[in-house]
Amino acid sequence: MDGELELERGQGLFGRIEGNLAAVIRNPTKALRWLVAAFAGRGHVLLEDVPGTGKTTLAKALAATVSAEFKRIQFTPDLLPSDIVGVSVFDPSAHTFNFRQGPVFTHILLADEINRASPRTQSALLEAMAEGQVSVDGVVKPLAAPFFAIATQNPVEFHGTYPLPEAQMDRFAMRFGLGYVSPEMEVEILSNQGHANPLADLQPAATLEEMIALQESVARVRISDEMKRYVVDLVQATRTRPGVKLGASPRASLNLMRISQALALADGLDFVSPDPVREAAIPCIAHRLQLDPQAKFSGETPEGIVGEILASTPVPT
Image (cartoon, rainbow, N blue to C red; front, side):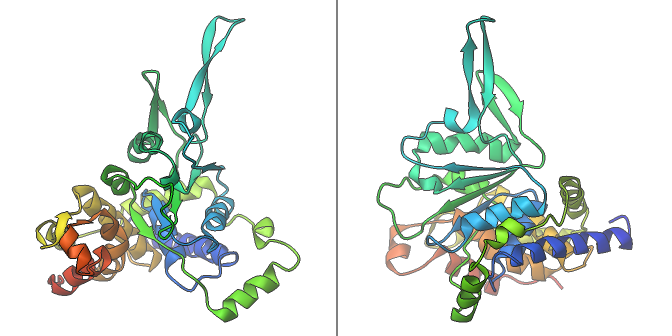
């Protein structure tokens, strides 16, 4: 990185954002840290958890924290791709078509219950998430920078849903949940919500310009060739592991490297050590794995398999 000052500023900004989110989302897990790391690492996040755990509130809180434009799409079976990217409307007075932007033209997009829309509609996000642009009527239209997609889905209730295809899952840098809080924290939530929603009083902790600068700082965190090989070894091990029908892609390696750089910066380091790689491995890799039927019937899970790979893969010294 360019110097200690930039390192301190990056770590401080990361901490301010995470602290601001913690004022609204009372969650003891690493979910807030991972969400900020994904944003700083130019990735996208799939929040997979039961209803009522604060997924939508978290997305809104992040947008308010970084002074970003926020839009939410409620995915339903009748949602169309044009409802996401936009549509060209004919103007009879001018005899021309005018493009009306869809909600994807924003900084932070919440795709709520993404698995309730048809695969055709889900695919409308593929280009946006991978390339930061959409193609409409043969014209490429760039999205705002930064663009961060947060999708949610319920891992328990599958009636009327369409499982996300492998290509869609691979676009998400991380998948994790928020989980239930302790009884003491739940009582605190009730007290905080007694008079007003804490989200209404949330003040920005950063600007979009600072977020872009943070993303650039993350990209400059040093990662040695040995650590890059460690990242690749973890990902490649999923492709040869018995019971795994489809292993993680090279995009998983890239996402794991970027998230590790972001976590290193959050910890005040200008280089990547094995610790952030090991921390990010399961949320970055597990959701990309497809297990064969026998492995599923045996009770194996993608998270468990990645955990085994972490335990068996030599750590660089």
